[in-house]
Image (cartoon, one colour):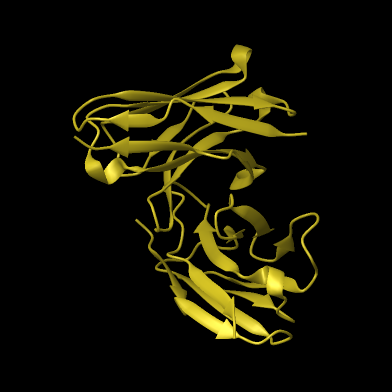
Length: 107
Length: 118
């Protein structure tokens, strides 16, 4: 099975900073990669699918890129409401594995 | 408005069984694959199982294969997860999730908590 890893596992940044999270697949998955945001105590929310397609209603400060095995989620200007754990997920084929998550908070 | 409402969770002893349900509304249920995703307390998301719109393809995580059974009733707009031989490590919040045009999840329920303990 394809394994998903994320780095860093956590980060602390200032409001307005550019934040980048990396997701890596152990084998190529083309662009079958989604990103989710889970705020503390809340249900996960879809941010991006097809590696770079922003879900409707998601702020444009979020963007995704990558293909094959290496992907990134970028927050162009971190806001207080972005404090959350971010997960990537592969969906090219089962099992539809999630990455371990990256916890983002405000410095 | 899309709504997914899980039920059936609770406290169960190791080795026993439980059946989770997910009632769906606000979309054409029989046009979408559906999935179960779980989250152990303080841990990350773990995909559990998925079923296509017509039940023609079903998949499971290795951790539950042979113990859990996913099913759906399109006439009732409902998704189910039958969980047998439950273990302590199955303790988690179980989410029902709607697949979009691909097996990524655009809507999630609030979850139902399963606790496996003696």
